[in-house]
Figure (tube, rainbow, N blue to C red):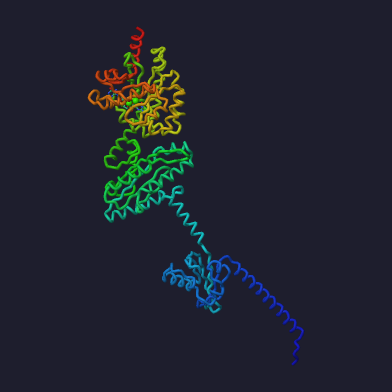
Length: 589
Ligand code: C2E
Ligand code: CA
Ligand code: CA
């Protein structure tokens, strides 16, 4: 037997060798490729034997866990464990791997530094030809940043971006929880709705950035007034809510509300300007006023409206009677809308008389509503509703248009008397309108051709809406409209402040005239107002003059004009024009 193989055999062997070499090379290439993938993968990879002993880890593994290859090979993966998962968690995981060959999920492990972190881990069991498990391969990514983003997301959806306070949806949750616990523990909870008065004006006057600063500061001041277990949230632009839990009496809520009023109303310095803002608060109490979220929210809102109506800068509790009042007002609103469509509103005129000459010097236009049944409805009833609903603008327009219609006749009857004017009441609510000047300008340029219009604003309007009022009064002046301050004496306005206003007339409030001559305090106030007005060259009108004694006192004190039942009650247009004609003829005599 020769060792030599036949050529055929040799060829066969050599081709086998070549193919073996190829396969080997291929497999070496594959292995190199595999190593490259293994090493450069951004996923952490760890390989264990069937008994769990670690045989290999990659670079990403080291990056993520902090353990080097040397520190891990030969050890068990329990090295990485945090104690965030219980035994059941791992049992479950291994059962899945044995059953299906694979498991995937979120695991919290511990880095070498001790830090606990989340990872997304997949574990695959590797089986040989005999279907026996030989290895496990674990591949994972660090999802700390994903979690953080999710956390932010949770923050974004639950907290107000600007103030950092819980937002509406989180507040809603907390309220539900609080009601549940308060119900079980038989405790009370108080829900407050807060609304910053005049915030819109500040935002417009100083810009949104300043407005934002302002809101952050307001939030801080509200927070200062509650305890840690209470929740303050931002509900809308300038609306906040407060939830007081575990309280035992309503007095506590009143105290907190009082503190908030005081704390918020301390002056702010914004863009080098000192600013005062106030807040109105509506309070409702669980379980007294309601036992579910919806009812309590509605109640708090109703109480807030009530607080605003009461002149803002105060708090009001919800009470069932308040609710009854609301439904009554709602009916009033519907009726008023219908009345406006059906033209049931018109003006009465109440002349003003000069004390010196006894002549009519002007009049106040007072709105009247006679319903379908010919009943008069008092303005004291429907004006507040009109103010709340914005219908006051329509009423104002009606008044201006009516006066303009009368203008030419009045001018004819008052030839040469350019100071004769008809006064229209401008409500404080109209100042909360963005384009008040524009709006007045439009109606007025249409209506004041005859220069007959005068505007009355109450002293409290002037005090609450200061900067805006000054702007508007100046604009009115430019449009040749006179201005008087109504209900003067009730609002404690500062005298120095009055000097800044372009005012023609002060109308002393009826309440001071009413008790003359019995009430000496009222009399000295009237005396002071007249002296003050005259020192500033402002003409003084006394309202509600009903008796001769009152008139005599006012004459002695040099009051300029009077308005009241003693001379004239408010009267319909025809009567008013006839009166003017008579008055004109007397003047001509
Ligand atoms: P006001 O502006 O203080 O108007 C004077 C009120 O006093 C009028 O009541 C008038 O009729 C009444 N009055 C006049 N003389 C006497 C008197 O000698 N004795 C008594 N006891 N009362 C007298 P009225 O017309 O019921 O109006 C009530 C309030 O409704 C007004 O108070 C004003 O605030 C508001 N108002 C009336 N018309 C309008 C309007 O067109 N626009 C706005 N915004 N408010 C109006
Ligand atoms: Ca008035
Ligand atoms: Ca008045």
